[in-house]
Image (cartoon, rainbow, N blue to C red):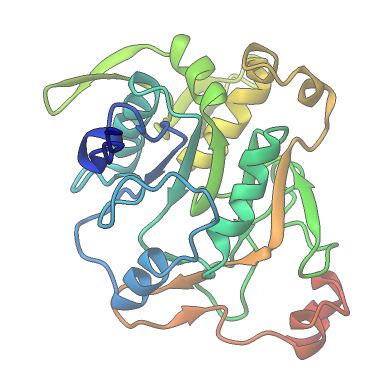
Length: 282
């Protein structure tokens, strides 16, 4: 009499240990704790790419959302989380930025290729007329010579919807001083503290301040962190940060729900003219 084949116990076979998802992407949202419903719909209504890091039906990716901290402190707690858990990628989605529903699909392509260490979507200031937050050259104003849908290289882009290689975060982490945030030891990877100094040429007191994103990107270049993170080809680039303007992000006012830009010239919105040309419409 032949023995019947035993049907494997799927509960035992598909164990979390055997099929554990890799720590591929950490999504970070520093927040004051209150967000717009429009943001929630965009954040959790994302199209999930095929073979993405699904953990279970409720928690399909790792999310880190420090609440009630100063921005730099929240970002540094996330940097600690990224480094200690060995994440491949860090994605910052700020709580007033509404990404398009295919944002993860497009970012996933950059993660698969792995050859671009920093990629941002495009969004505009909360103003009318609006200004795109993309820069070439300090103190030169925003960069305008591009069409919507193009991939644009810059030397400064914002953190509102920004993908950064975990290797780059780790490289900066290794050379950052420790400090304590609410009892937790982390490192000052991100910083926006104003600095003051005496100009040796004039003897005058000089002071500079800015945002954590611009300070971080400046530090990466000046500290040669591209090479330290395994991206030496970016050391020679004048504009090493990529802004994919096909990832069009809305900037929402938390109090009123107004989304910026309020309007755009039709020819620009359809990718026929540059933003520089569109400025004539305002």
